[in-house]
Image 1 (cartoon, rainbow, N blue to C red):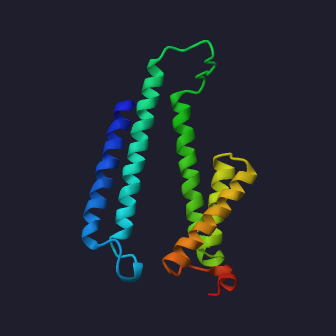
Image 2 (cartoon, one colour):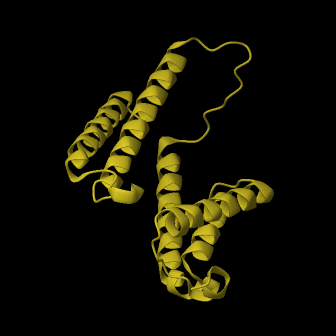
Image 3 (cartoon, rainbow, N blue to C red):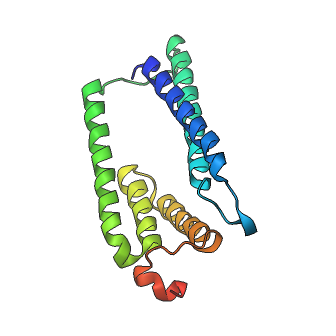
Length: 170
């Protein structure tokens, strides 16, 4: 990876995020009775873009500082993986995640959004990221609960319920 390109990408994310957040204020963030208005989602997305851009910039700076320090006796990392192999693995992983996302979109009307979303998170964590099964299950369960709280309880948005309709009273 080229650090200069990462810095440019980080700056673009920060600039686009700041523009989203700033321009969305004109549409309003909160309405009467603490209901969200059309500017809420662009505002939050803008803040997230700024945060992600800042994290990418910070990580690029840290890796650049780390790479300029001379290796010590304790450094045992071997760089046996080539740049071409790394690109292939990254492309394969991205294709796999997009394939899983497509399957989740197809299954959402059948299984319901919450169940499908939780399964998607579990499969990505356990299968793609190779996280521990217990950790993956706990995170996917927590994400499903968080999605239920945000969409059904807080925002009152009706998403596909599928087979979970009797459980959620839909």
